[in-house]
Every structure is written in structure tokens, then in C-alpha cells.
Amino acid sequence: MKKFRKPGSFLCALMLLLMLMGPAYAESSQDNMAEAPLPTPTLTADVSVSEKVVPGTNDTYDVTVSMTPKNASYSSTTTDENSKADVIFLVDTSYSMEDEKIEKLRGSASQFASLLLQGGNDAVRVSIINFDSQDQSTVRIPLSSNLSEVQTAINGLVPQGTTYLEPGLLNAQTQFDVNGRTEAQKVLVVLGDGTVSDKQAAKDSMAAMKLAYPSVTIKTIGYKISSYTETFFRELAQIDTENGQYYNADTDNLDDVFSDISQQVVTAQVNIKKLTALCQKPENFDIVPGSLVNPDGLTLDMDQFDAGIIQAEISTPQSGAPLTFSYQIKIDPVKAAQNREEIGNELNYDFKYFYDQSGTEQTGAVADRDLAPVFYIDTEADENGLIDADQIVGKGADVSVAWSPNEGYSLSSALLDGTELGNLFSNEFSDVSENHILKVTFIKTVPPVVPTVTPQEPVPSPETPQQEEVSDNTPVTPATGLSNHYSVPAISAVFILIVTAVIATRLKHKANR
Image (cartoon, rainbow, N blue to C red; front, side, top):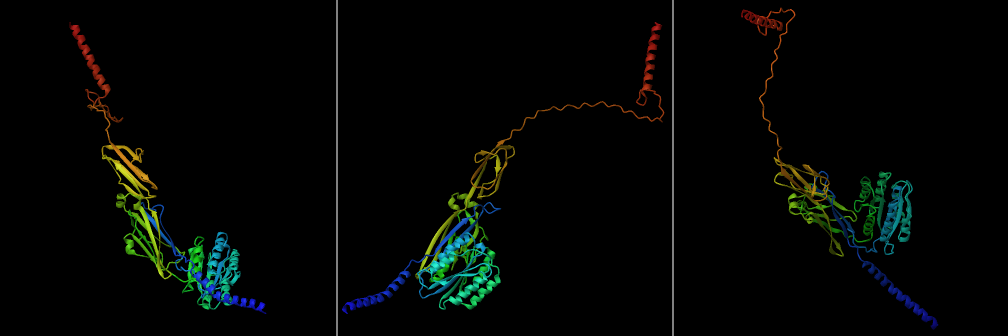
């Protein structure tokens, strides 16, 4: 008997020891999980200046400032064992989800499931339901805490058919009815990539679910959709007036969207308290009044803005959702002329964000910069002519410079960056992308030698006597003297008579001798 009692006593003692160690081990495991590193809220921020000046201007640039917070609303990843959640992921599998979209979705959704089901406990359960053609919604897996099975269901999603959301919503409500836990938080995540076939029916089904389960939290994700379709998914989320939330996602930020949703489900809430972006305007520029385009939710100190300092603030930024504002800057020609260093054209931004973590206030910071190019067209003319003033312009500008000589001078040379332009009196600068120097010189004009001509007295031309026209009916008057009133025959007759008389007289005189 003693041989049997000793082993029995040993077993009893071993069992008692295990019973004492068990709770201690479980408590230790929970403590280790609680001490896991917490993700720190981060911020991706950048400032960008338009590549060229605003069309129609030679001195104005567009400036865009974008800030995208990550882990902005929730910072702890410790799962509360006393908090339970039933999460249904209702996903669009219509034909438009083919290729890159579905591939990215499978990977991101699998990571989403692993974030929700971390720790291997059944505090959180996940169901995967797809929707596409009418009456073709399928429960890929009912509410389950088995990560491997959930991920298998996600990897089996295949695009097909059109887009009917209503059957999927009915299946989701049935899951809550049949498999949902009374004490568990209920979360519905709906992802779609386009407009649905019957919007009103879908809204009615979502409203019916909210009526049946007033505490259900609704999250909607517009996956690479247009602004027109985005409105529908926003309206779906707004049916949950307390906690509803819409996310605009693409292949680049889908992981961040799922990460934010998972943190809201399984962690304690820690909001970023404030986010600021501070920038002194570039030294060679002024801010264009009235050019600010500001999104909803972002507060700008307008007194500071008018003074050239950008100070933006938001109290509760949404993780993964970029906050963007834009404005214009214009070259200050006086300062730009005084300061030709590139540093005077540089935008330097300091972004800061403030949040609570572990009961203490934390601060994060990130910086970014960009350059607004300024180019100089220097003009020079000698004292014998004029040229347009120096030009100070931005990249892509189109300007004209003209020159002219003083009176008594002509163009000698026009050199652009050392190259002769020829006999031109203006130059067009198109799409300026570098500095230029334009120099012109003029030369005194030598008047041409003109030969001297001595004026001569004009020689009058003889006048030709005009004959009167005699009508056939006018009688001819016989000639009685040398007058213009006698005809030529009459004059000839008189002349013959005189000559005859002279000859006769001489003959008579000779005879008398």
C-alpha cells in the first residue's frame, strides 16, 4: 500500500502546485501584454510649391500644405479582456474590384483581422460577408475568433457580378441576431469601390439595423471612389449619429484605415489634442490676400496668416485622412532685388502635434521644405539709348524687353547672355527657367553726303502762235499789211510786190547812167 500511496501523494501535490501557479501565470501573461510597446501617433506632412508660376502671371506660385496623421485617435494596443466586440466586415466583391484592388484588399484585410484577433483570446470575433449581384451576398465565415479561418475566408474573396449592398446588410443583421453576444460591442465595417445598384434600399436596411441594435458602430470605407459616390458612403456612416465614421481610402493608405478602425475596436481611446503647422513666409515673397483655400476641420489663425505666418490647428484629426490647405505667394520685387540668395525663396515648415499617452502629454514634430524659384533678367543700356527695367520673375514666366536709341543714334549691338541678337529692338523671354543678362549699346548716326546742285535760270519756251479757226462760212479778208490778221498767201504777195519794186528801181537807175 505504501508503494501506491507515495505516487498518489506526489500527484496530488503536483496538481495542487499547478493550481497555485496557473492564475499567477495567467496574470503574468496579461501584464506582459499590457506592457507591450504602444504605437506612437505620427504625422506625414509636406509642403509643395507649384512647378511653374500660376498661368497668366509671371510672379505668383500656388502653395499646397498637406498633413496626414497616423494613429491619431488611438494610441494604446492593449486589449481589454473585459471588453468584447463582434465585428462584421461587409466587403464589395463586384467586378470593379478586380486585379490590383482585390489583391491589395486581401492583404490589408488579413492584417486587419490579425490586429483585431491579437492575443488569441475570444474577446473579439470577426465575420466576413461579401456582396455583389442581387441575392448573391455570402457569409464567408460567421463570427469567429479563429484568425487562420478568418484569413482564409478573406483570401477566398473573388470579384463577380454587380453591386447590391442590401442583401449583404440583411446577412450582417442576421449574424448579429443569431451569433452576436449580448454583452459585446457590435461593429459593422462596410467597404465599397463604387455606387450601389439601389441606394435607397441600402439606406433603409442600414437604418433598420441601427434601429434593431442602437449601439452598433458603423464604419464605411470608400475604396478608390469618386467624390460623387463618396457622398453615399458618408450618408451610410451618418446613420450612426454618435460614432459613425467614413474613410476615404486607396491602395496607399488602406492599411492605415484598417489600423485605425482596429484600434478603436480593441484599445482605449486617446485623441491627439492639437496639430499645428507653422511657417514664416519666404523672405522674397508676400502672401496673396484672399488666396487661402481651407478644408473643414482645420482652423487657421487669420491674424497670423495676414502677417505671413501659417498657424493651423485641429483638435481631433482622423487617422489616415489628409488635411490639405492651399494659398498663393507673390514675389516681392523690392526684397527680391535686395536679396538674390535662394534661401530667400525657401518655404520651411515646422509641424507639431500634441497627444496624451499613459496619462502624460506628448509632443511630436516633423519638418518639410520646398523652394519657390526666382529668376532675374538684368538689363543694361549705355547713355545713348533706353532699355526696359530689370525683370524679376518666377519659373515659367513669359516677358518681353524692348530698347531704343536716342535721337541721332542707332543700334550698335544687342547681347543676350553674351550672344549677339542682331538688328533687333526687343526680345521675348518664354518659359523662363534661368537668369539672363541683356546688354545693348548704341552708336552716333553719321549723316550721308548729299551732292550740291546749283539752280539754273529757267529758259522760257517759245510760244507758238495760235491760229484762229476759220469757219467755212466766214469770208476771208484780203491782206493789207504784216499782221496776224492776214493770211500767209496775202503776206507772200505783198513781199513779192516789194521785191519786184526794188529790182525795177535799180534797173531804172542803171539805165539812167
